[in-house]
Amino acid sequence: MENSRYPKFTFTWIGGLVLLAGLMVGTMSVSFFSTIWKIAFKENLQLRDWFFMLTNAAGFVTAIAFFDFIIVRPTTKKKLNFSFSPTNFYTYLLIFPMMIGMMFIAEFITAQIPTTGPFFGKYYEFFSELMNQITYDPVLMIIMTVIMAPIFEEIIFRGIIQKGLMNKGVAPWKAIIYASVIFGLVHGNPWQFVGAVLLGCVLGLVYYKTKSLLLPMLLHGFNNLCSSLLITYTKNESFSEAFKVSEWIILAVGIVLFSLFCYLFTTKYKVHYSEI
Image 1 (cartoon, rainbow, N blue to C red):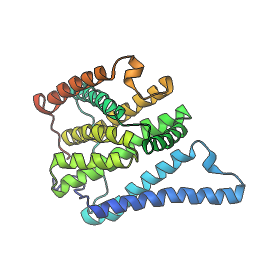
Image 2: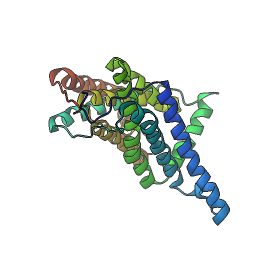
Image 3: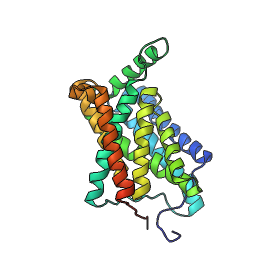
Image 4: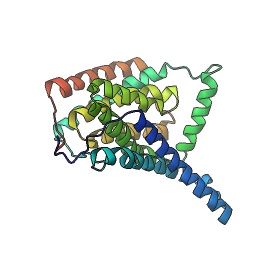
């Protein structure tokens, strides 16, 4: 809509470079501040539990700001803005079971990726050590994964990349897949890549149908909350181990849940909203 208060920007490789530059500037700024602080006060802020969280937040905020001021405002004469409108209660009853189904499917597929061997073994050890640092403090883990990550990542991957590709004329299903693959790649490891791509497709579908970033943010936060609770109370992100059932049962339940509620959401009960 020409009179929409939401800018109709496009996403290209230049936009990708702008996001990357913003991310680097944000994280490097925090590191520079940490260095100055260490020289002035003889204290290494990087040893603080919250430093990693602050660095991530700075990187995301700067990346979004760069895209807004360098890409969106000059080309659309409007500031970067998204719809965060809630929807009817029935829609939530459809999208959450659909998300749970894909979470189960993603777990089964991820479990098939090797964690031992000359390549995967060392890589998995490094990945595990990194995750242990993130999950050391449950409070910080919840803040980072359940609140910060869904907000910032959905703005970038669904709100900027997916929407920008669709505004450029890319078919919706292709835009959803492209954004989801990029979402998976930035996780930097094969074990999270699979889940990020599959769950990203669900998040992208929900955003495409409802035109509201609130819903994929809630679903993203729900997924990360489940993972955080599994890590905290079972020391593992596995539903099959938590429920003491076979991986194949988890897969079967996942396929049924996802297929049924995806059908209801996309075909039987068609949800269409528009940004105005």
